[in-house]
Image (cartoon, rainbow, N blue to C red; front, side, top):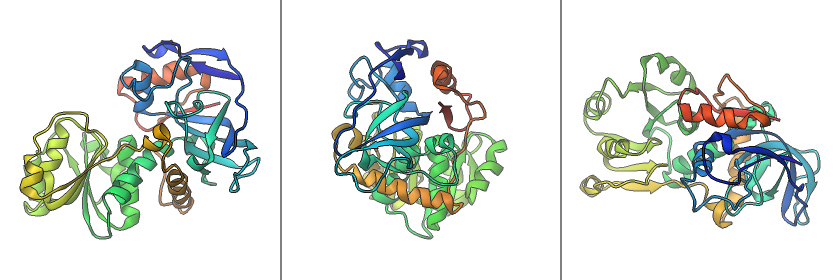
Length: 330
């Protein structure tokens, strides 16, 4: 089968099209004919060699997000049959059998769900990683409830735009940060009640403006670095902070002084270590229902790519100029 393969870490041009063996079906697995994938930041980090602990062995086929059609069903799999249209986050790193940058992907059936009926394969491929991350942060870690006020940093980012919609579905009061006044209408359309331009208002100003200096019940940080300190500052007494970006040094004094609960979200753990994988398929099944009910949708980059153009797709991701998820259609 045709696949985009890397044999060394490096720039986007390390990808090379090669013919590699088609995977053979295994018990508990699905063989998926891949129709689409999407680019996530972790895919670029693995390619650059910045995440060696989770990188697959060379020669490697990358990308975790996949949408496609079931070609074969392994022994013991009861919930899928040949021809099912599916999606999931199921490859491209250590602990997985392959990657989505290929014509076929062998995937643990627990990581897969039937794709939303209302979406194309490309649209569906935009959802798995960011949806799983948002769901785990809001509901599994943060126990978000109706009427809770939540501050979501980066409301138009890959994870952020899904988090806004999920929080809206849950009935929370949603505040979110963006980097431009021109983005206000777009993020409001996703469900944000109040939008903050973090470049023109500092934390103290918007905490005072929106919460009478009390702070937010729940702060979800998708940015990291200094913004994690901002999240501690923005949280209310006995509030909650969840982050997807905790690989940095911080003073934890504010957590103690405010009695905060702090949650780190690393949704790749089931893929890497082979634990609790069934939960991912269950979340994606629920998310597919929300999509088909009109309560959840992906934001897509206008420029889309083919499997042959993966180097250009990664270059666009790293340029910081993409708006919405970058899709590859095969």
